[in-house]
Length: 197
Image 1 (cartoon, rainbow, N blue to C red):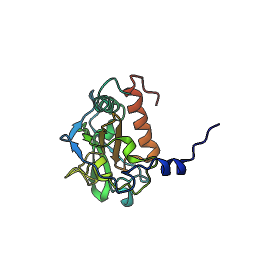
Image 2 (image 1 turned 45 degrees about the vertical axis):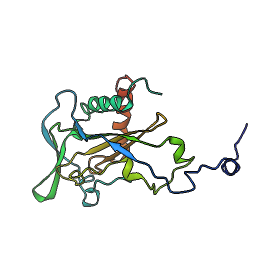
Image 3 (image 1 turned 90 degrees about the horizontal axis):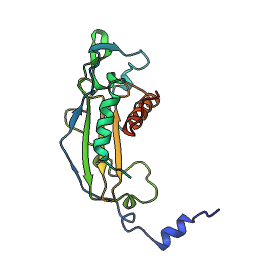
Image 4 (image 1 turned 90 degrees about the vertical axis):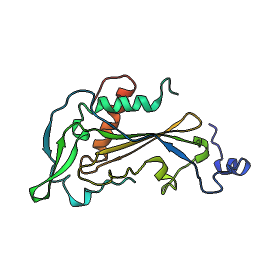
């Protein structure tokens, strides 16, 4: 079986952008909230003591026939019906107890266009990624734990037709496995399928 020699290929065909720090411009549309597409319960849900920890209260991030941003936006709205607590806001009760107010306000969604292709990023991308702030926007007023959208999603279209999907989620609401379950639901609904989880 053929195994390419990547080091030799890089010597023979160097990527000029990879030899200097990658820089590109991103034009973002105005952020918009995506609410659930159907009515959801209006209620407060207490977080478990495992999830309600001071150390988890940060909100930091470490071939389409249709517009991919539109497909993702619609799928997120559909997924927020069964996963409706993600469309709410964290509130703090007496004794610093966190609850999620299930109010259907929605998650924050940003569409963007970048003047770069996927090839411009090179073969491998390792953290720390120097252009992260271009790919997941830190929306003013939405960086805190309380009273903020629990998920921020940015879809960045590239010149080559590809996209970069980036998100931030509030870790007090879900761990990585729990959030992956929500993303899997978005993917299933975006493909036109039914929820399996």
